[in-house]
Image 1 (cartoon, rainbow, N blue to C red):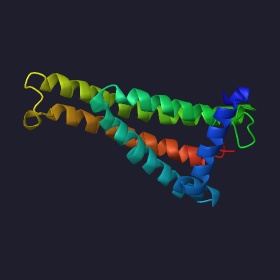
Image 2 (cartoon, rainbow, N blue to C red):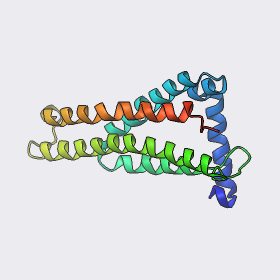
Image 3 (tube, one colour):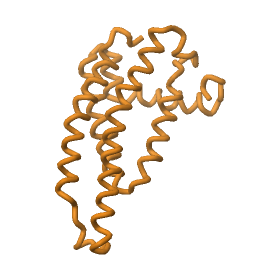
Length: 171
């Protein structure tokens, strides 16, 4: 929509990016040239305010699908710069944009998928005991699997944030 000049999408993009530039700690640090601090703040945000809540929403099984659609929308509308020109103008900026998306897509997919799997297992395990709060059972194996997945997710988010903010390709 932004590449076709849709006013709604461009206005929404300007609003979101403008708010991020004014309030987001990662953006503020990046503007000051503190790229490692920007990467750390981005990493913290992706992990604690993005992946962990979406993993927990996986208990609802279908909820993460709605949040992922919003993430896709945001990813699309920021594919133009502040002048509403495409970030796909040359190979370097195109590669950077898609590589950052890929680096973030992988850990988000693992975190969200593990939450959905945990939610399905939670449902299947508890349907035999009834849905009484005092009888809910969380399988120990499910928690262990979440731990294994997050042992991969955490460093992947760190790498993604470091590349996003410290790469010389970030133009």
